[in-house]
Length: 94
Image (cartoon, rainbow, N blue to C red; front, top):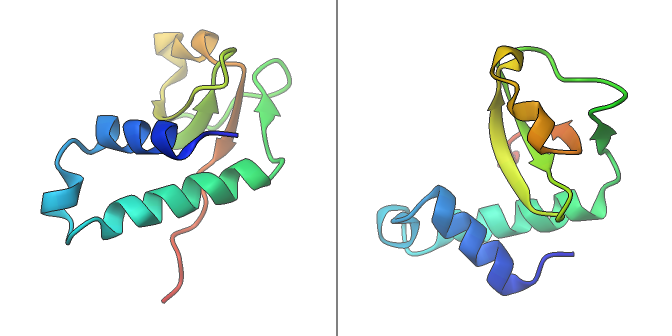
């Protein structure tokens, strides 16, 4: 499971200015809650079993358990860099 610091670092890497640009950290809290929810799920699909549909955003994890978001295009061969994937969750309902 990722630590609070690792989650924050991942978010800052994806959205460098999110605290100031996205209403005082609400984006980060949403991202953090999403990461925690995903970690509690066991929906990871091995790339050896199945690859995602082409040209969709997916959540990926590598052999070092680093999680990221990837726009998947099979021709690029980037899927060889991760071990498992899963679809992104639906956005929260208000």
